[in-house]
Amino acid sequence: LAVTTLTREECVDDEDYAQLTEFGRHFRTIPARLHEVHANLSIGNLGFEEFAAWAHDDPEGIFRSF
Image (cartoon, rainbow, N blue to C red; front, side, top):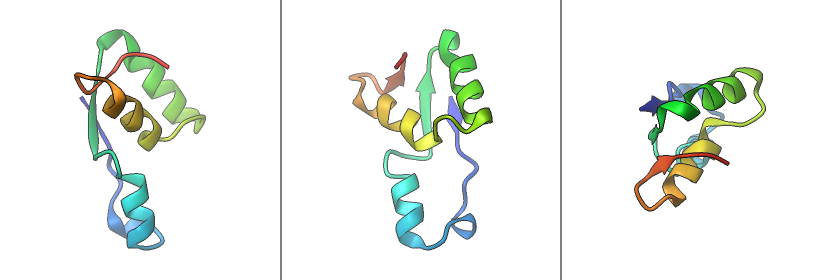
């Protein structure tokens, strides 16, 4: 389970917060993809909201790969 630590206070306004949490504040991933999530978030290549959107698109709500 991947969970964002983003809070409203860190966002410019409520609209920014809504956009960044549109697909939720958490998503599930398979263990083999956890490093992929961590690495991309660490270097700022992808945002949490992008991974959450991909998980949202999966029928079971799980991030499996790009």
